Amino acid sequence: MKLKLSAAVFSLTTAVLSAQIKDTLAEKMLVYQLPIGGWGKQLDDKSVVNYNLPLDKDLLKKIKATGDDHATIDNNATSREINALIKAYSTTKNPEYLKSAEKGISYLLLMQYKNGGFPQYYPNSGLYRKQVTYNDNAMINALTVLYNVAEGKNDFDVVDSKLKEKSKIAVQKGIECILKTQVLQKGNPTIWGDQYNEITLQPDKARAFEPISLATGESVGIIRFLMLQPVTPEVEKSIKSAVKWFKQNKIEGYSYNVSKVNGKAVRTLAEDKNSVIWARFYDINSNKPLFGDRDGSVKYNYNEVSEERRNGYSWFGDFADKLINKEYPKWLEKNKISE
Image (cartoon, rainbow, N blue to C red):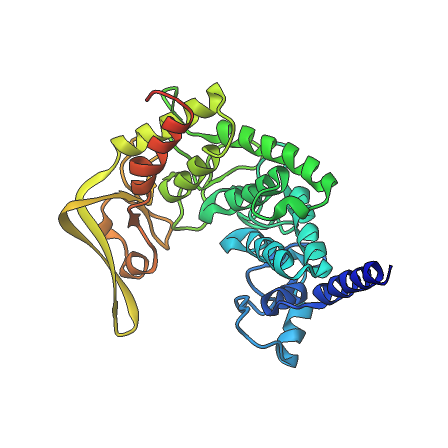
């Protein structure tokens, strides 16, 4: 009897102690979380959220002054925090971390449009913030969190069952939106744009140097998300069509290099017979690489872009290389699909 009692006391003590274990990063994320449940990428004074900074009085004052209009899924905000809090909970079992993560998940569910898309910000709907946003993987990051919740993967099995059911529905709506927004050229699916009108689901422009276009980097992320899903005829067609587009529109014989000169980034496009790259943006009709400038103009010659934008934005990359050569073949093999 004493042995059983001692074991019970030890178990209870362990549970209490583990609940009190604190993770330094997670503790800061609790402080930064906005009342609506999401997180911002910036504070009210436009300073960037930086979890490396100590929480002194001045910073706490800035955080407190930051309202819900700063809640966003841009630049990995909100998905980054939810993932970190779930990870922290898995190691500490601190209930505050799970509670905060679930509040963040509820925020993602709240911000999703009925058509399945996600705005860049919510509730802030100013300028391009209300557009359905794939840019910088915003919508895919949100859907990946909800997918993990729905499937109980990557330590998300601890999330409340009601949120799991809601997340399953949200993921399906998201997939439907992805399939609807894949750009068609003469009836043939290609890849995706960076952002879309939230009502018509037609491609739209955002900042002056982000014109209506096909976006390669974001489209790779979309394809990877689709490859996680059960294979339906619609999903299979979407993936195959997008990969085909990437194969047809690669740029061979050039590399894109970034170096530092006097502390500033200098980006150069150079001949390299062994390299394959893609432009970040392509014309939505002609598939020609295009480049936007600060004044809103669209250039089709990289060298005509202003120096500030040429060096201040990443215009090329090997975005689809790993996808085409490794991930896509594995997906075909795994699902016993012929190309």
